[in-house]
Amino acid sequence: MEFGFEILTLLFVVAIIAGWVDAIAGGGGLITIPILILAGLSPVSALATNKLQGSIGTLTASLYFIRKKTVNLKKMRLAILATFIGSVFGSWLLLQINTQHLIIMLPILLICMGLYFLFSPNINDEDRQEKIKVVSFALFVTPFLGFYDGFFGPGTGSFMALAFVMLLGYGLPKATANAKILNFVSNISSLSYFVIFGDVNWVAGFIMMFGQFIGAMLGARMILNNGSTLIKPVVVAVCFFMSINLLFKAYG
Image (cartoon, rainbow, N blue to C red; front, top):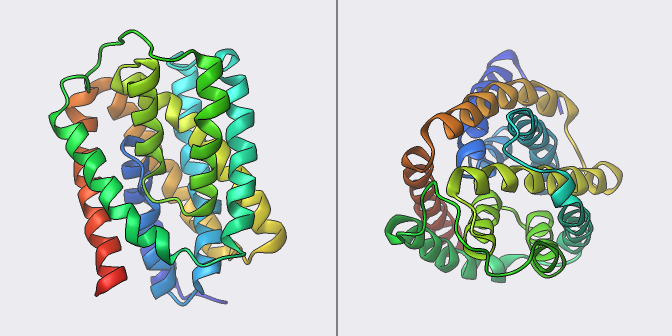
C-alpha cells in the first residue's frame, strides 16, 4: 500500500508523540495503531507495522539507559531470554484466536494500575527491599509480561515497570528503565514473528522509526531528569486514556 506525503508526515509526527509517551509510561501503540488503521492498513498489518516502528523507540530509550548505567544487563540476562520466549508464543497465539475477551477485561486492570500509581506511597524514586529474587522474577513473571506484549500489547511498559516496583523494590525511574529493556526484547521477538508470518508495511514503518527515535530520546532524558514527578502523572493519564479507548471499542 502506498501513502501520500501528507499521510507520511502525519505518521512521522504521531510517532514522535508516541515515542515520548512510550518511553515514559508505555502505551504508545494505542496512539499509533489507530492512526495506521485510519491510514488504510488492516488490523494485523497495523499491529505488525507498529512493532517495527515501536522497536526503534524502545531500542533508543534502552541504549540511553544502558549508557547512563541505569540498568545492569548482566543481571537481566535470564529475564531477557524469558521475555523473548513469552513474546514469541504470544505473537503466535495472536494470529490464531480472537482477542475480544481480553479487550473486555483489560480496562479494569488498567484502571486498577492507574489508581495504584496515583495513590500508592511506594511509587517514588527510592529503591526498597525486594519481595522476590531476580531469578524468580525472571522465571515466573517476565515470560507472562513478554507473552502479553506479543499477544496484545497496550500498557506493556506500565505493567513491566509496576512489576519491577512491586516485586523487586525498584524506584520508579530505575523500574521504568529496566522495563524498557524487556519491552524492547518483546517488541523484537514479536516483530520477528510478524516479519515472517504477518504483513509489515515497510514504508510507513521506516518513516515512523525516525519519529520514534526523536520521541524516545526526549522521553528517556526526561525520565532521568524528572523521575517519578513526571512518570506518575503520565502513567496515570495513559492508563485511564487506554481504559476509555478500549471500553469504547468494546461497547461503543
